[in-house]
Amino acid sequence: MRFKAAALLLLTTSLSPAIAADINYEGATALEKKLTTYLPENLVKDGLVKVRPGTEDYEVTFDPTVLLKDVDKAKVSISGLKPFLSLVRPLEDGLWRFVQDADLNVTGSFDGGPEKTDFTYRIDKMHSEGVVDPELLYFKSLDMKADGIAFASKTPKQTIDGRFAGMTGTLAAERKSPDTVDMRSNTTFGAFTESLTSEGNSRVDISADSLTGDVAIKDLHYKPLQEIVFFILDRADKEKLLPDEQKKLKELVRANLPMFGQLLETFELTNLKVSTPQGEFGAESARYSVTADGLRDGASFRIGFGIDKPTSPPDLVPIVYRQAIPESIDIEIGVKDIAVASGLTYFLDNANFNADEPLTEAQSAEMGKRFLPNGELHLTYENVSARSSIYDVTMTGSSTVRPDTPNKQKTDVTIVARDFDKTVAYLQDNAKAVPEYGQAAFMLLMIKGFGEATSDNGLRWHVEVDENSKIKINGRDMAFPQ
Image (cartoon, rainbow, N blue to C red; front, side, top):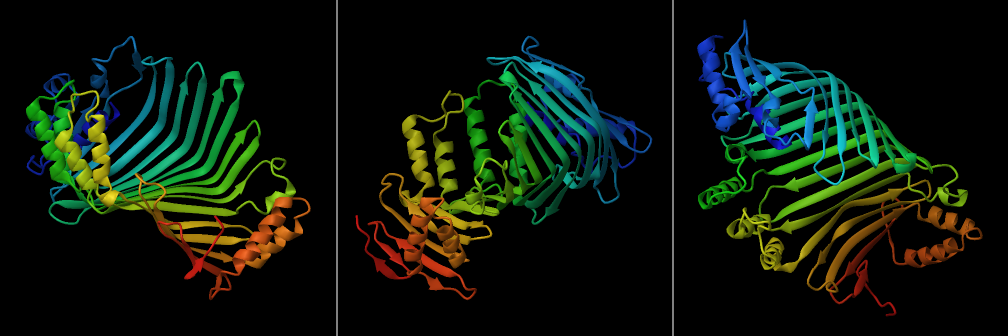
């Protein structure tokens, strides 16, 4: 339902330069016909999209209540949902100016599972203004702002209540070639709070000063993707696809490979606080990132997490351990050389979209093999680091794993440690209180002998482990007792 509504709302801003620049009834009729060309006939008749000429703009109305007409009212009830009005004005260069002012105050319930869920979504005020590129079916530029954002849900077991003080955002698209575009969105939410109350009145409160998101997609092949969206919309109400329709959908997906060149996504929370019955946890900042290549052979995927200055309840961690807690942590790992196109092609060649399971168990296993050339999974450690007042350690490198023979793996990593002597001194000074610290200090002193000095007074270990578990450190063969 959400995908369908979003796609249809996007269509309401997808205008053609062929429509007359003058604001008149003929232009409104032509615009409405264009906007509804790809919609199922029943949605067109029910008035999902309506266009009428205004004084200076076309008034485009998108009525989401039409999408709920056939919903089982015994399971789903929604109130407060109302049409969205957008003002669209043709520009001299063939683009279109878009303006929308709206608010949202929707309540309802959903009873499609083991328990009933009541929900509320509210936005006191939202404003969007930008320019639409009619050929892209997307915004060339768009600025958005919203105030008073709130949401809530309630089940017999849990209640969630969340709020954002406001939101600002931008969307942009730039043509890179006749067939590809670069797209980017930036969004910032302010003063976020969320409360979760479970059975027995156990409560967790989450808050942050801000939440920012930056998503970019490069070299998107937009025309084949549009065809897939229109194909799905035209058959959204069908339970099963005819053989010719399955064939057509598979052809459209193949035509869309690799779909895009690269996806970049980052999110960050500042001044995060989590209050629990055990006390308050938090961090100065917490972040998450994803980098992914297009759906092609030889593709790579990376995911990253980071946290700065984490905090915990004062009495939770004994004083002797507190300096050992990292002041910052970064973990960025990935996989590379994945044959995504080969795996998807096998899926398309064998999938039955009408079956409960599109592939048999044997076919699923075979598809998995197609994704991994030579049966190898290549892991990368782009940046793994931990820092505090007594240590600074980073690791980069890679591992090669064979899922069919997990004992046959190779690793090649480089570890660099700074403040090494400070780390050892801390462990030795606290060995009486924590005997394990004494053992750790002894091990670190042994490891120090294998390290090589770096230009910034650190120590470096280049560790290689082959498929026979033989180890080299900085090029020297190591013989450890088995």
